[in-house]
Amino acid sequence: METSITVALAQISPIWLNKEATIEKIVNTIEQAASQKAQLVCFGEALLPGYPFWVENTDGAKFNDEFQKSLFAYYSSQAINIANGDLKLITQCCKENLIACYLGIIERAHDRSGHSLYCSLIYIDSEGVIQSTHRKLVPTYEERLVWSNGDGNGLRTHHLEPFTVGGLNCWENWLPLARTSLYAQGEDLHVAVWPGGDHNTHDITRFIAKESRSYVISVSGLMAKDDIPKDLPFYNNIIDLMPESMANGASCVAKPNGEWLLEPQIGNEDLFILELDHNEVRKERSLIDVTGHYSRPDVTKLVVNRERQSIADFED
Image 1 (cartoon, rainbow, N blue to C red):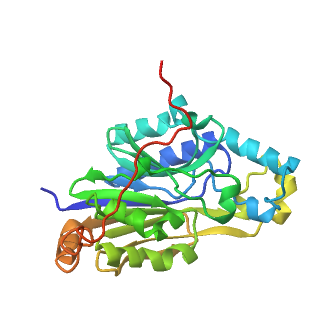
Image 2: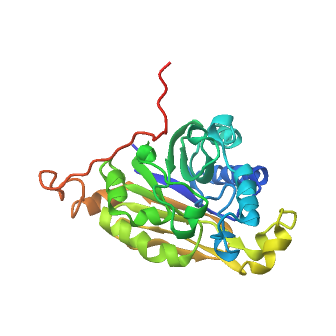
C-alpha cells in the first residue's frame, strides 16, 4: 500500500462576488493540480464567491440600512445552492481528473428557507461525489451580520488512503471540541481553510499539528483592492473605503511533529504541491494519540450531534 499522497494548496483570489467566473477559475486550478499528480486540492474559506470583506469597511452593522441590505441581496444572488446543481462543473472536474477537493463556499441552503447564508466547507471525493457539507458552527464577529450558525452534520472525516482527512473553517479551528470530534474519527490529515492572513495561520497550524500529531494544511485565499471587479455593482460606493490588502494568503503545512513542511506563503497567487508521508504520523502517535492511547473515555467523553438542523419536520 502507498504510504504517501500528493496534495495541492490553491492560494488564489476569487473573481470577487462573481459565482460563474470564480467557478471557472476553480475548475482550471483543479485541472492544474491534477496535472501535477495531486490526489487532493484545497481552497480557502468562502472562496466561492468570496469573503464579505465589505462588512467591516462600510458600516455593515447599520440596522435596516438600504445600502447594506442591497449588498446582502447581491451576495445572496451569487451564493451556491447545492441542490440546484451550482457545483456541477466542479464535481464533474474532480471526477474527470480523479482528484478529491476541499472547497470553501457561501451556501444558500435549500433546507433553511433558501435565503440564509452559511459558510460551508465542501468535501468532494475523486468520483465527483459531495461527501460532506460542513456549515461553520459559529461565524466570527462581523461575519455574523451575513452568515448563519451551522450545525454538526458536516463534522465528518473521509478516507484518502493512506490518510483520514477532515476539515474546519477558519476560527473553528480554535474550538477544542470541534477538533476533538474529528480526531476521534481517526483524522490524521487536518485541513484548515482561511480567507487569508498570516495572523491566522502562523501559530495555530503548528499547534494543531503538535496537539493531534497529524499533518495540518492551512490553505488561504488572497484579496487585494485591485481584485475588486470594476463591473461589480456598488463598486463606486465601496472602492474608496476598502483597504489595499484584505487577505495576504499565508498558506502553509505543518508536519505531525509541528515542524514546517511549507512555511506561510505571503502574497503570491500560486499552487503549492507537496508530498505527505503517512509514516510520519505513525511515528509521532507513539508519543501521544489524544483520542487513542492518551485518552480516558471513562473520565471525559464528547457527545456530538450530527443531525442536520431544520425548523420543521414534515409528516405526509
